[in-house]
Amino acid sequence: MHRPITNGIINFEEEWDTIQYMLEHIFTKELGLEVRCMNVLMTDCPFSTKSDKMEITKLMLQELRVNSFALINTAVLSLFSTGKTCGLVAECGEGVTYTVPIFEGYALPHAMHKNHVAGHAITNTLLSELQASYKNLTKEEHFDIVRQMKEQMCHVSMDYNTAYYSREDVLDKEQRSYELPDKDGTIVEVNH
Image (tube, rainbow, N blue to C red):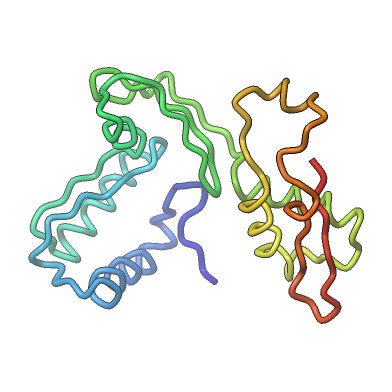
């Protein structure tokens, strides 16, 4: 599988044709829309560069010829969805985690922070820990399975210290068990 977006950023120098093909496919084949008649609102990573924003705008207006186009910061839209215009947005995705302070509907670039510890890194860490106990787990074959396990079993605690030192387990033994789709039906148990 080809991934033209890394850590929330499109590499336009190498991926221009891929992005154009992907957008055309999404609009015409998947959604069945006539692109030239559309007004498009697209989200943008808070850390994309001005040149990246110009490239995607050029692609949408000149190549795909959409009727109108707006590119808006994802953090700003997330905050707007709560009915607020001031706040701090923390977003964790597959490739990047970032915090964006927003004042009166505008992101404050000088105060934004980015960290590459996100969903992909967490899945890799969980896979490495499981490989210590289950030698038949391989990164290539089992990454998606471990990602599913993470999504089913992991959670974010509102009070980390209390949850960490608590003897109570959020999940019972059956909920912490996961059957691998291998021929042996290996059961993996995830401890807290």
